[in-house]
Length: 162
Image (cartoon, rainbow, N blue to C red):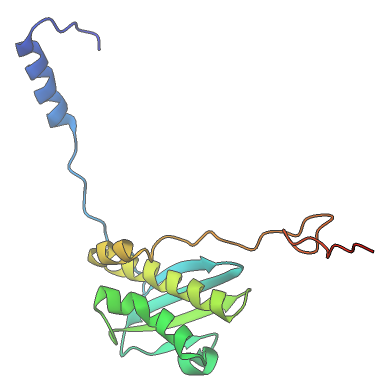
């Protein structure tokens, strides 16, 4: 501050000027391509999913296969549908995803993360319920590397007395 504040009136005038300088945060804009789709990348463990969503009938396609063909376990199918139920938009979006790396559980988590991010980009008003549910945060837990002199990351070799 270049000027010195010596009285309460001076402080109030400076505070009013500071309030006028603070800009009102602009609302987020939807991010869509020329085909009306939103794209996002989701990650979980070693799996990386590229996800496109567009308005539709709720069809989900993963690596060119239907949801119940690619993710046969009902638990994995439930994981994929969670973002839609939390946002309250079941059967309103078609999903096309390609996923690589990891196992089926990690891939389901990666697609879920990608769907959540793409929904938030398509309709910014859905951001608060998805964020409150924790779906926009990448789960950073990954497998710990194997250490020298150990059988696994932390497991030691079996001790032999004789």
